[in-house]
Length: 289
Image (cartoon, rainbow, N blue to C red):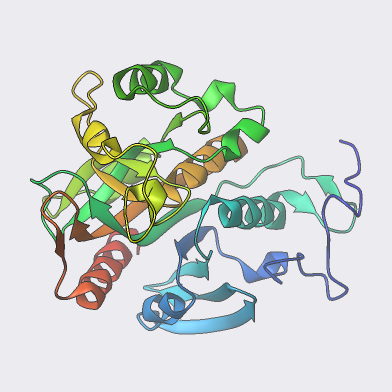
């Protein structure tokens, strides 16, 4: 293995990785990611012990134990650009020797569980439900910057572009799958399995209009009506496709847990979004610990 240059993997003087400010011993093999830094403590409050807390920029990390299982919870911020930073640095923490700056001979596989909020684009997925993303389609361009063709489900993305008359001026959609092992471990009668669309923004990219008009006023309808061998797009958010793509490339297992706090076709928003997220946190922790 060749040595990784200082400009490519930046290690702080205290031995921590550049953005996350974490050292290899600070991270558990089971990692929960949340978008909001304030949600980190909402998860770690359920831990039996907390051994470590660290914060830098929007990246807040708590590592502790629950029922004897070591777990880290980390905030990513919003968007797949942040996912690119977080997932490359998480992988480096467990799979790169910081002293030799070489990839380790034996690689470590992380279990990574996103707990986040999302809006449904299907009328029959109710507010305050828990949705597990089996697949994700990314409308960002993150995965196309990597040698990623072998993890992309191109038959689905090509069908999507045809059915929606996707504009060539937008990034090329890509489809990736979550970890089937984690899905089987965490799903139950309390969850819905879905196909998540990861958008590059909250307003125009998700067809919200405040003062600006959108390029395709029918986009959400096209998403909702998309069908690939019985698979339909169920919800919108901003990280899952990047999480699944990088996890597949790096050899980690990932799953995205979505608290459905909006139903877009019905124009409804949850009356108890914080309670729903808290219930999803408790449900997920019970399943993994």
